[in-house]
Length: 331
Image 1 (tube, rainbow, N blue to C red):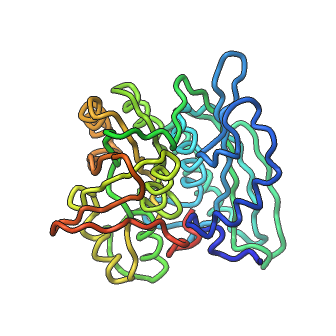
Image 2: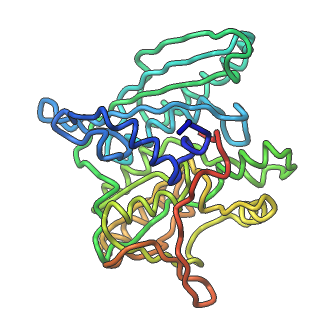
Image 3: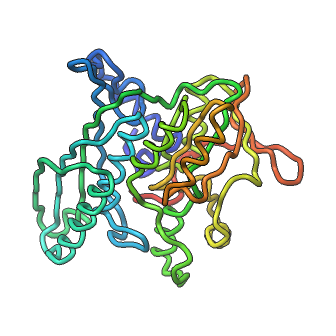
């Protein structure tokens, strides 16, 4: 078997590669390690739950409507910490830069990173830079790693029958914005990436009630995230099609491009499973945040298996996990 682009796309094919990459994992440091394939690791240390994660970013194009590779690099790591209940504290940054890259573009990227860090109340504390000869790299690659502290650890595997599924906003924005930019579709300001650091929104939600499970729907989109949550939790999830928030412009562009908006990456959204008794309070808390104004309760957890969409015309269909990602190199 040879590695191909599908192996990095967040879908079912990626699982084949992960089986290889996780074979060396024999120690989880006494907490939650790589074997869980969660958004990060949790390491008990001095009476605290340290959350640790890392991510590499190869976005094309580097600048796009609503953000750039720098904002994604910081937001992605902060969001992985937040999905496990971790308040972000410190990040590292490793950059691999192609010879000939414009310094003015680098300054713009670093400025975006600083802005995202400020939103999350985190700091960039260490880093590394390498330069490769022209042609050896497509512009720039950024790796960020982060540590946080969690008072309450949240997983993506702990849904319970009766839970309500909440999404923090409209789905498909980032992936479709990237695809539209690549296809040179002139859509004005109608479609923009949602890339954003989500810790402050998650913090509000956690203060409003109990969260049983949480995940950010990045590579593979909502379809990949919700199927992974259902599979790990051993439950069935029923989604109401008419309750799922998708912008009209995103739905239209998806139709033009032949892409399911549920299968493309989001970079500023959260999927949560919460007890029914807390659902309204948590939804209200999310909607009070600037990144959560379009949040909605979209489904219910049941005993059983699979993710089932209840359609607007009274039918049902499976929401299948994607095999790969129809929009590669989006994060």
